[in-house]
Amino acid sequence: MKTAFDSGFDTPVRIGPLAVDALMKGGLVPQVALIPLNAQINSGDVVYSASPDFPYGLSIGEIKEIKISSDKLFREATLEFAYDINEIRSVFIDARIQ
Image 1 (cartoon, rainbow, N blue to C red):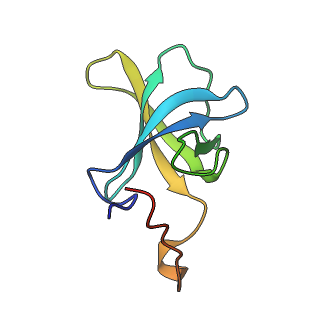
Image 2: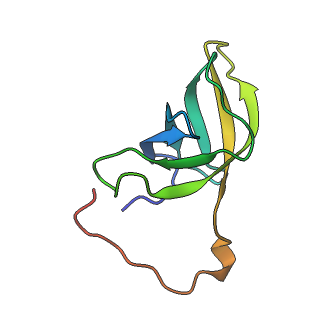
């Protein structure tokens, strides 16, 4: 089972009030990638789920640092979760999600 901290994890997301399409990529520092260059997003914008594997609109976290991708075709951003991972004491695992 993959988590948001697994480098092989990715899921479609939407950003902010304009619902900009992007892709969340997992890892030790989760990222939001494939953000269109002309998209109007800001640090602090909410990132929410857009995958059929999760409840639509589930808040995942907030955009932090935004930069141009290395290929200069998109922007990417670091993602700050809405919770402190060190304070989580129990989780629910939905075995239907692969």
